[in-house]
Image (tube, rainbow, N blue to C red):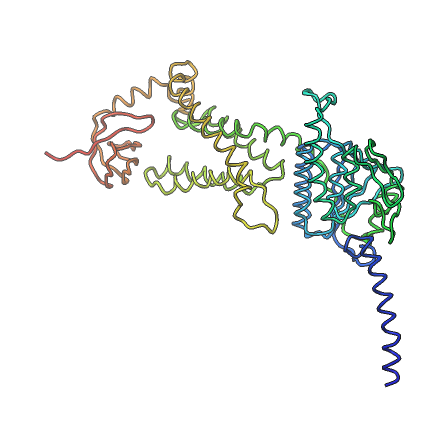
Length: 482
């Protein structure tokens, strides 16, 4: 009993001091245990933020976050040196970082100005290199040419500042940062005072060096913004307890810039692809229009892949759809199922290629995820309909059309020869060798011809007569025995 009483008497103070220690830890880490104390080596993905915050960088971040999620990485480290950039791109990057389920850290490897500072507070911790700087995040308005900064009207400036403060305040609160510090970087009228210490006077935009950002204020003391200074990225990983971690660096490929421009013209690429296939369908053989259409659609899928929106699996789905449609037209005409199935696969592939899907998400996209691809597809459908309407009236009267028709017959048949062949078949009687629904095939003597009825469904073995020609098919009518 004495031992038990003694243990109780000393155990309570020990638990008390343990609670004090854990409280200090919590105050320093925003409700989380310091990584260096608790982490075990895992997978670390390093994402370089080494340029202006512009749409191509968004593509790099999206690709990096998805790669880290697929690898089930424990850590995502932003290696940052940026002068800032576009607010809309910054907002999108913050949203993407929010999808990563593991720990996120920003290493300010020299500068984190403007939008870079916003992205930094979107990660759970900030570390800084010696003599590095963070802050100066007041919104500015670029000139139309992007070559300078314009004077912002006072009312508009207040609206911009208010919107930016709201966005960054929510992010800062989520990750346990001092909201007053972040707002002082945005609003020049705010200033910053912690206790009795004036850090930035009203009228000054807050900018912090690494030593200023990690300085402790208040009771109990808490670091202003940064969790510490690390001499290098390797030193940071050692601080995080990840010196022996499996490390992956997401390197820019140069395709991000290409992907940006390809996605800018995505609706135009779809229009060219659809119109190219339409012209190819209306002319015999396979020629320039089909090749142009295929190239345009290939560039569309390449742009989506470079943007980190989709993998190459949707290209495969699209190719399968093209094969099914080709089988319907050239091998099994009139079956309908192959054509409908192929067209459906092509449509799904075009839409899903532009849907931003992440590992672990439901396979069925939500309505917000479908907004961009459906907008592009809608523009493409309207544009294609207008282009086809114009081309159907103008193109047949041009030398280009006659060239397409002549070259379309694999270079072996001229338009005159085709007309002669059709004239010889006109009026001939044959037998259908497939069901006509209404298209199919029929045999006339030794020759097998693609035919189409006048809307009637004709069974295999029906005697038919050629009465006209429509595009590639001969128009037939059933022949009844007298």
